[in-house]
Length: 112
Image 1 (cartoon, rainbow, N blue to C red):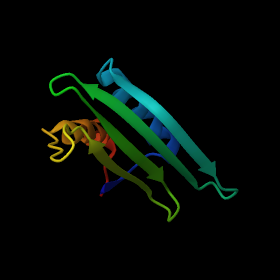
Image 2: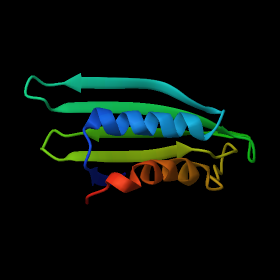
Image 3: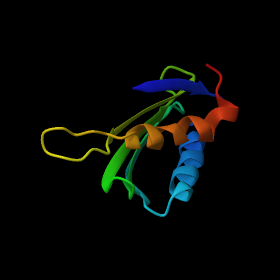
Image 4: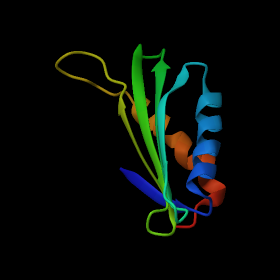
């Protein structure tokens, strides 16, 4: 899982990502989101996205976690899928392509 810290709240980071990911392709969809707020202002936002790639007729998923449980807001993300076949599930770069949008969308806010 890739991670980096940002100068945003988890909700702000998740909102930017949601707009960027869903706006990046017609075939990108938000599968679901889970948000939890603590009484002291900490929060966790977990979002799962799916995207269809026509070039290899496959789907890739992306899980993004935005949280500030330890103070700083951290964004963690991992892509999966994008492969074809039963025995050899070659990715052909679909999952990596999908995860690249996370760092690109938040590049101006990365602090660590």
